Image (tube, rainbow, N blue to C red):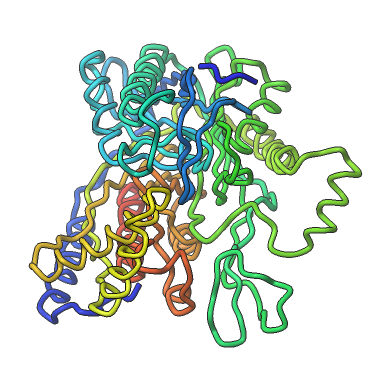
Length: 497
């Protein structure tokens, strides 16, 4: 089809550790003493919109270390916005706009660009309560201008694409807000095997992403998997299903190595649901805590391939089939228990997390790699990846490295909670948050920001690509701070009960 469109404290002084610990304790204490947040039942207003974010000219793709130029579209990448507002008569109680995007991440500056555009067009919405999330498809456009060695002509440049993207996402946000009408919401839980932990562990304790499992020294898969399919359904005031949000702890990267625009398995999920529930159904893909997960098989590959061939399905179709089948059960339950007066409470705060420190030995090894790669333009992405960690080391040495700041959205909608983070957050943390949350169900949305892996403590012991210093701006120490403060933020939403 033509293109249309951690080593958690290494090198840190004791005083620095104490300062960071005090900051974490202070933030937690502030949450505990906040006055009870109102969760008053009120009329729920709902709006939605979807737009294509597929450019109409060739584009470089993000998600690999080498340059890929897409000249075809296998499935369009889209942005889908959901607007929520609770009202008591004419009194607005709270609001939110959530936008799911078929992108690898929400790169630095993009959220601010969208908020600026939205603020100019709708005066009755607090733009701080708008957030974006990425489904983590590795076959969507590049958003960083200097990340790859790219041709100067014949493609849409990343800086041009970002402007296009911000305009389109703002359009969807504004349309969703302006479309809001009284409606109802329901929630439910199903199960589907979509993700597999992608870190193999060997006899010597070493771990490797996508490591060979047929080796004689293979000893197992490192961590847990979360097969829950958390579902929200939204109906208009005529009882028509208008939108659904589906939370799966798996990034959409089954076809990550291709050189064509592709929304990965979310496209098939959307199309399947629309066949059953109408072409205008809005589907928001929410990726749960899944930094160590992938849809790619780690073992039993031959058996899986045989079964798919017997049924005449591609791997994308098979993954979508599982999610859609799992969706049906919570949809059926939610349909029997709709809430037009579900309380909506939305809090936004900035968390400070300790940055992962870069050791002197790591900086020397990285400098050697940068020197080796610097003369090859094709290795620009990999070279810059190493260089960023060297830059952090130099900031450390100069005393200029600040804590990592992240924006946390915590939302209560009836009996359910929604919490965001900007990382590829390892599943251990997601399980902790869900288990400790007071909500009936807890939806975790990762990659509501620029990304970088945030590994668990056990993963850090095993090593490998997703836990090396280049891959982590924050290590396990910061992951636990994130987890604890996310739980406290959710608890504060139930503090009136």
